[in-house]
Length: 173
Image (tube, rainbow, N blue to C red):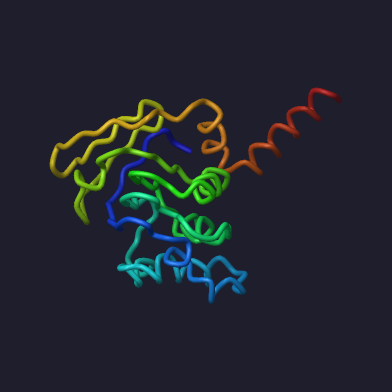
């Protein structure tokens, strides 16, 4: 994974819960192609999956991902290949699920006011610099620490642990 993401912004409000991100009525689906069709289908952008492009960015207000602890919400955003999620704040469990699945989740106070739907947003995960390429507005978030960057660069925590184990096994032989 790169340390920079750039994509079209799609805006969501405050308190977007996991059931809005991925409605619970679809939890029995098992194929990613079916799962990703329902990304954000309980929100103000119910057809997001039809026009969202890999690398596009979700920008939200406060408490994005609140609600249940189901991993499905983060999985569906991974399925549509979200470039990053920028929010004023996150639900704690959703935030960790997103990072563990290799989705950059960046907290940035005031970001919702600096971006409009359709703007091009550029994020540098290593420095925390955020630029609205459409308007020239800039914001600063906390840079991601090395551990989080390692998770993201490996595509999630499971692939990172698998890679570490493989390297350890090679050294032991």
